Image (cartoon, rainbow, N blue to C red; front, side, top):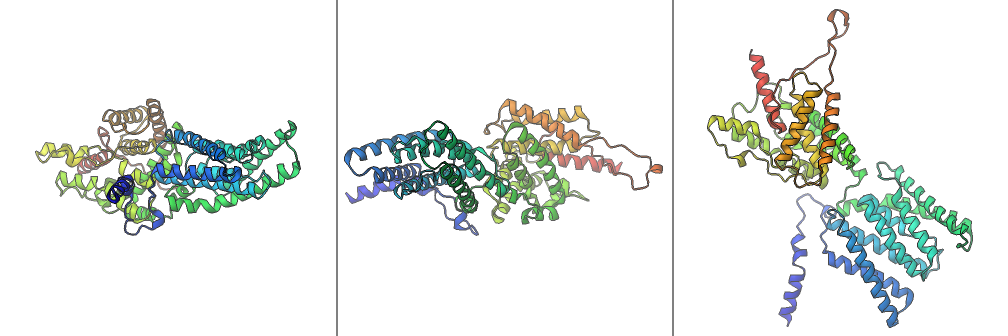
Length: 512
């Protein structure tokens, strides 16, 4: 009997145990991913709703049965929606459960203490979910929490309407938080929505009581306390649940970050290349409506793995080519390893997981074509796997955009006398190569998105490679503008292959 019980619980917690990993060296417990089974979260949230309802209605059998049916129905609606939420992680699920439980229990406590019914806690929960997870999830929780509040207040429609208005106000504005004042704008939005809902109830004759207290004073208190609590809890939740907000992304984008400063000083060519890629990728991301801020910051860090061996990458070479004395397969090994080394550096410097995705996915499983062809011509090892990046393929539209921007920037830098037609043909060729090679198969990008991305990349590259006028030396009192010519064939879509070809042709031209 005891053995059977042990076996049962062993199987029950097997999947959970497999997800739990020991923290890596130098990784604090706050940065550890939280792995909690979904069924356990459902039980905990359902229990909190049951406790709140039973505390209000009593422990009679029919009340307990009604509370159980309502909680089950409520949980079913919540779970059904979460299935449509794209790739929500365990840590985000746990955060969602915690804020829901907080809102439900605090609402029941406020009711039991006879606080004014305009003191609501839904805006706090909705604001946190909106800023750290998604707007869709936040709005759903606003509706579900309003429904629970109405039941706790014995079906009071006024409570339902005010709570729903406060929750929707928390998810309405601002759309993204990029500075601290935006949190107070969020509080202002909450106040406006609650005031407007109270005014509607007053005009319909459904509000009974002190209008100034209910529509102005209490909503001001709710809005201000929401802003203060959200400002204090956001950094804490980011650390505990390993979630990256827009404010955290702006911190990562600060060029005083140790990792970016190291990139700038030890691999200045790669640093400049990353800035160009970031400009291209951000414009493309904004065009198709995905997270342009995440795309830009990811582009800053996507090539940090080149720091360990900067001399092997064309943009950092000032003299001889370091690959001249290496076999093609060894050169390819050095080139390909920069994604893995970048991931190690990101772990060392505490870079967030969403940025690590750009580091390991921006080449997908492409082949370093230059060295692969060179080995084939020399009769050496021409096994494709030796020259192939380990992947994985881009999993999001943002990482796919950086992959495309990385290649087109390197290829168009190699163009001789770039113009609109050359740049457009180059961009279209590279995008088509990635598409036909299946590199975009695992990200939710559409053909319409690809077409828009190609147009934006072409337009932005044309602005970067604008034609410079040559001023006569006799009329120019200052030094003549430096115009650097780079001659290379853009046939290869892989950025590192293009860079190596550029160096090879450049040396040939110098010898002439």
